[in-house]
Length: 242
Image 1 (tube, rainbow, N blue to C red):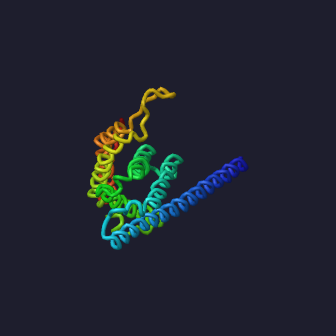
Image 2: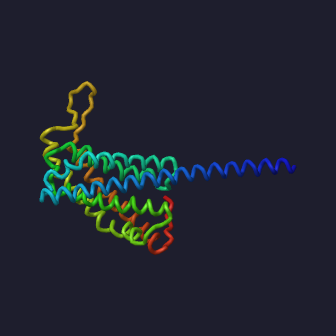
């Protein structure tokens, strides 16, 4: 009987040690990842400021930072993996929508249509994204290190009230500016007849994407407001089951 209890205790200790090791590795990776992403977006911010100071214009700014922007924004796909394997307790769907919409804006709208790259709306969402990501990744980094300055927590849960709507406006205006060029060029579209017998119109795809902001934006924005109340004011948020 005693031997059985001892075996159970040893097995429990081994399981606890494995869990602690996995947790330590996950924390180490997340800390490294968030430090790297903070640094990446800081590099983008400095590059944008330097370009504007030297040139005195935003024309050509996007092209000057495009490679760095594409790398760090695409690398954010890793965050969907974090959610999927459970090392971050956030919805895979919410994270996936946010990350993939950004990647779509970079690769399939702004990067693909050079005529819109100097639009003010592009500069608007770039500035908003940069401020948002520096704040967000800094928050995660200091939180993981258990040394979170209050001003970073305050910035994380207050600046979005202004930045989030501005970012959406910049993205929507950029897509709207792209529509005439997409319609004329027929880019990414498939016309019938073709060997696949499939029709796809990228122009209408972009319009549908713009309309999708109507239901999605309020959900994501009010989700952040609930998080703000919980983190800054200690309110207990009770989520209703569907």
